[in-house]
Length: 210
Image (cartoon, rainbow, N blue to C red; front, side):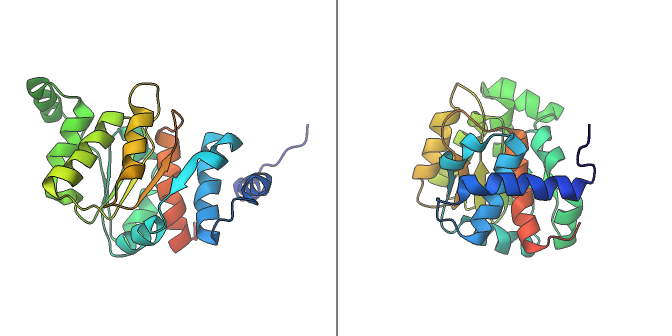
């Protein structure tokens, strides 16, 4: 059986297959790139009509990343999926504290999830940063609480937690917020690879060299 073997050729062909599903959505060129990488990561063209990108989200994330901002994630899978070499070329790093013993202890004492405790522990470091959430709805709810109650102002929130408990609600709350630009997906779909793909898409818009 003959098949495509070169990674870049595979990527190019994948984007060609995805393109018709985006043709009638009237997206900007940059939005097409983000949509395409999300769909590519998920292997699911049904994402096309349920991706939601705030009009200022891509520009806000680009500006922050180009200024050397850090990225904060809810789980290690998101952190692992982000192109850290590309991020470092802009001067930023990616952080995740969910697996730390201190965070587990805080979560136990407070009666909250470790993802909530991790996000809470970052505190003011989240100001001006890009937040990428791909697994835990509770992390997204906590960040939105911090925005609402503590005046937290990240540059952008990529909030795409997956699942049947809280995921759709947390993403609906994100899309309804009027303070922070966001990228999200409606409903239960999402996940760590999807959130990481959205981050990488924005970095590749800035600099597509590999």
